Image (cartoon, rainbow, N blue to C red; front, side):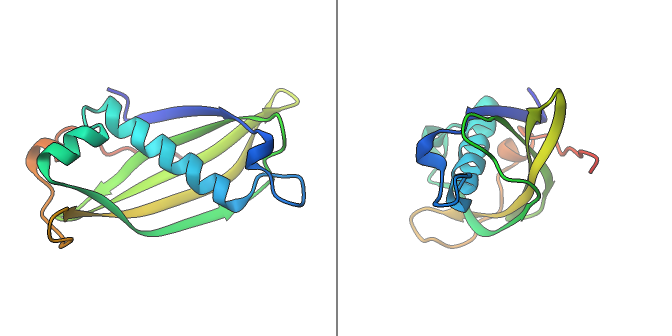
Amino acid sequence: MPSILEWTHTVADADLDGLGHANNISYLKWMQSAALAHSAIQGWPVEAYAELGCGWVVRSHFIEYLSPALPGDTIIVRTWIADMKKATSLRRYRIVTNRTDQELVLAKAQTDWAFIDYRTSLPRRIPPQIITSFEIATLDD
């Protein structure tokens, strides 16, 4: 299973804002899609969390925008688990594209996730079977 997932997307008109580049909300959607894909590949699709009765909710997002994503850009969202504690996990992202045969970092981001019981909405200790499904990874800046 990949400790770092690469999720690919082509920037479409629906992703753009009034300035003609990708809207901030589009970055969040891409991050969410990449996180869900990574979790599913590790054996934890949305349905598995529903069956377990618990799963992840966002505590916070941080995004540092470095360069705009433009219409037609093929972007790659690289995502990985940077740490996993008792009831939280930090997921990181690098959003890149290739322009003029060079990789360009568009944004660096992270999401702090909390593991909760879906019925009570209270934090819950991350079960061992989830912890062992994800490898902690690092990616140099």
